[in-house]
Length: 599
Image 1 (cartoon, rainbow, N blue to C red):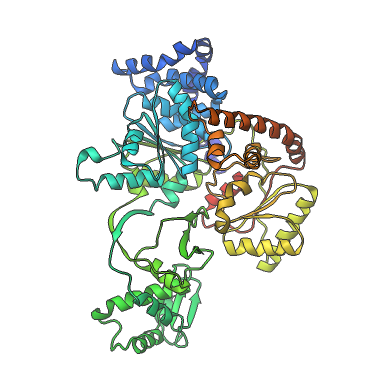
Image 2: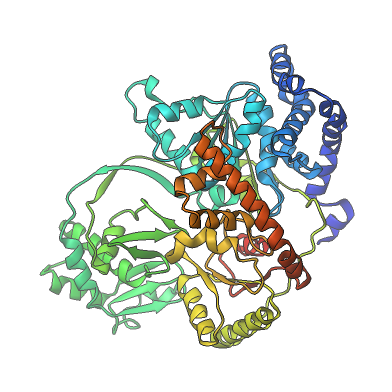
């Protein structure tokens, strides 16, 4: 902490001081709204809308709107947002970023400004990182908003345009960042205005805002049409690339053009810049292989392009790190979250070059019909806000690109996590041996251990070392994507050891002693309930279907039973020191390191 911060306090502390009177105004109304009947509380929506029509601003009605929503959440979900969540809600309403630590209840925080901003009838979009979270949060909070007379929509893949139009016409719409972006692109391709599904971009609350607006900011959303038939040239170029001898350079080398240094090699792989370039010797080999007089001749541009993509596919793109091969298909691994990105393809023929390298069917090339980056899309909103557990590390980017400031919200209870300094080893072998010994030491005490790695390769290397030592463990990486929720949910059990490639935005809570909800769902499977019914059992949507109501009753009973069962184990794990986290190496982004800690 520098001297100026010590003397004058941090920016966040000054902003929190400024917001304090507003927070107190909301809390002061608590008694008044607690005494209201259900009819009186539900009637507040009409009262507040009338005040807006008579000239009041959203800021003028904020205390009353927040107090109404808080009381409705208590009556419907038996949850009343804490003072720190009220602060977070005010920050979001003001079009800023709230940094709230993992587990501080961002879903409930977002409900307060969403209710307030929905009162003007222009629509609120709550954007999450995956379909599961959008559906889960949307169904849960719909009960509160419907109670208060507002409509809630859900926009996820697989919906018909008419369904989407209804979802966006609602007061509050839950959607994923990908789907809301693609719907915008599709709207720009329709022939008639009436076929558009979105009605405008008034106010967005973005969950995991750093992941969407920073990590994936430059990721283009692309709607493609079928292009030319895929050419055999990909296979030919791949066969040629496999005959070449590469040399790896760690970073930009001023002597990269010096052919004497590389006279024994065919192409140079620059690991830092992720580029692959033919040497003089490589160019000669290409001319011989393809029977060309001059590779750089404009007539040979297509062959040159295919060679460049083939050497990049073979030299830079690594299986089980950049992509996985599953069921005869090349699937990209998201470098930030470690998730598989189904439906996404590398552009400019790189994906086809990888397909040729892996010997799977080469898909037809495509041509771009419409495209936009998340950075440009989210700047369309009149007001944009976001929340995450780790935003301070990207504070300058948020300010420069989106004109958004970041306010750090204190935790509801004092932080008791102990953050240890880095330990540096001479060799990787020494480091991994130390990691294994550290895991075993804590595992033998019964303390649950979570180990973070950067790549699938390293997670499997650690897994093999643990197997040799006879330590039972679970591995969470892009190869075992389907088991994600199951693995994360039970990572807090006594003696559990979990290895994970990346914990950014995983969306499932690690609960000490185990996750009762997940255990209840597993028991329902054993009781022969269908997957559809199990999904409905833990959902919040309104229904009068007897079968679903029966499933919900069974789920509630099992959840209660398992909560009671795991309570002693949870207490035992707390006494052992809680979840022990080991980061085996630093990520490129400090924020992802912080997300691992935040578990």
